[in-house]
Length: 580
Image (cartoon, rainbow, N blue to C red):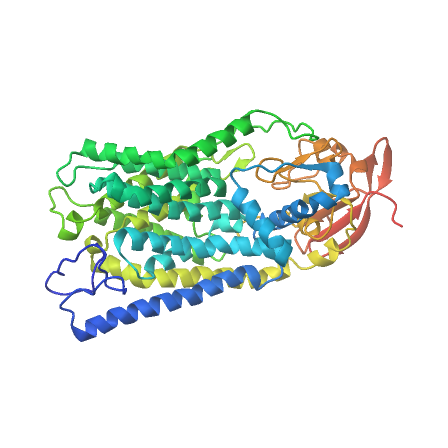
């Protein structure tokens, strides 16, 4: 299936499925001579070590700097710490109920709990955030190896280029980890579906079916959204099956559909969790939370189109944006060139294995998910970036469907040589911007250090944005205090993912409807009851001279002074009480 080294002017000879030009998994195409064989081996050995170096640099983005620009990671660190110490923290038990159960996000919580006792909450969340950056490139390379017989590092470089995007910057580590697990699950599923499509008996595919049955629940507990996409591809794999090896298309579709039985354990688990969630029973001791407004929000056409840039968008330099544009152009043109033309005879390698079927399923999946992306809203209540989550999956599926032999020498050269350059550009920009970001974040440690244990902190990030990164990295910095000592913060996620729910004493239940930890345009000071809070943390631009905070605030029927405790850089800490 995979192209050999270019042999002009005669056509390259056919190879059996699994024989590749750049890896020891298969033999090199015959007729190349000693030079061609040595070049092929050197290409493989140079590719993976170079990928290892770039991957190491990518991991350094999460470890080499004190201040992290990844929006939700501080929140995850704080919640990991709280859950870990909750049984021994009487203070936090007054304000929260911990009620975990199996379901989406369980893998994320499990990893956090395993790591927090060893390396602490902040390092634990750094380690977890690294996992998608490591796993996604390897999952793509694994899929190309398992399904198409390609053992080179090209698709690992492609995956690394796409591992640093807006969702990485938003700190969606749980979803991105779920996507990595999903890609491995799709590979296992397509291997099973392809076996049925090729006419193998049930006995021959029993091990593959058992592997899918065992692995699929892991996709669900990694992330529910990723699990739905996994089921969608499994459905399409039956639709895309066609006539093969003397069997009709309908026979092959039924044979693939029969393999859906391997998904029964995962679907049953998902159904049980959904029933628990929809039962409406609150955890014992928790107070009711106002129902979220689940009205969908649709963006305009220009905003929708701008999301196409997000799979590689992290910085405001424009470099990673250009990489994303290049990937979209290449993926679109290469997929179109990979589609077999009507009446074109199949190559011997394709007759002997279901590689055409794999590619057709991935192409169909990419197109279907793109159409779903176009139709979906941007947010549904608190669940945001609904449509944008699909775009990296669209690119993964489209790129996996590429047929190296059909795309031609020019596209092959761009893929082989351009993928490492794209990964280098994206990783370099992430490292450079993270280094410069430290100046933007300066002062946070000193100001947060003034918050004492068992304090109640109202977070009002007026300007949580960065001049370097294309997101809101300072939204959850108050949770860094929570990661170190018991406090109450104003914006905790109350749902199955966090496994935390409020008690009646939790002051977050009495916040005004205008409160939002993100997108806080202004503070409606009279709407807050400041007897609920010991400290107010505000964030502005580092060069701001004022926060616009009033001199006094309301505590019941009394006006009390709002005292400035500390101010460094863009960080301001106030206390609505008399200072000692």
